[in-house]
Length: 213
Image (cartoon, rainbow, N blue to C red; front, side, top):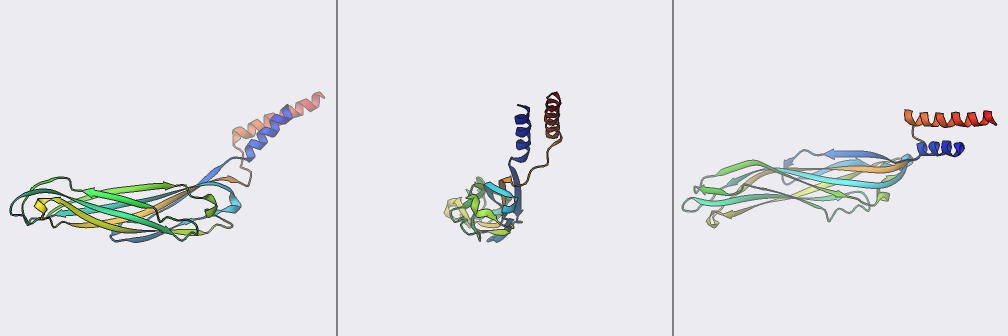
């Protein structure tokens, strides 16, 4: 029984999972944008890749200016949008269906005088999507890198102002990504002190049994 216990403790020290996290983040730039970042592939010599979590994120900052040409004061609102579309140079990683949508609005503006520009901002928004792509796409002997690119399409819309709005926007956006590799290492982990103590106790018990025999 003591031999089995000691063997089980040693086996527990040599197995288990680990994870590695990598990320990049691009600063916001005036839209429209095309930004690229790079992430490392998983080096298959480190172990067996169990799962991959890929997170894509985006942000926007905008100032929306309301203006109308009605004959008198009018109510209305302005909304700005940024949609981010993603792609990658990694074979098999299809991001064509991924879109991050961000929106910022002035809310209701009351009694705005005609031909009087009213800037509102800065207004911000952000969006994130978490993907769990096929693990085998990311494992390569010796590692390497792959790229992720985002491109923006921004827009603006006006409501109210008696249908005479001439709104404008000044918008910046940026994107980033992070990846987490969950894997089982091929090499034995360095035992923690408590685990070493368990092994030591197991070996002492084995020695005591041998002496009694």
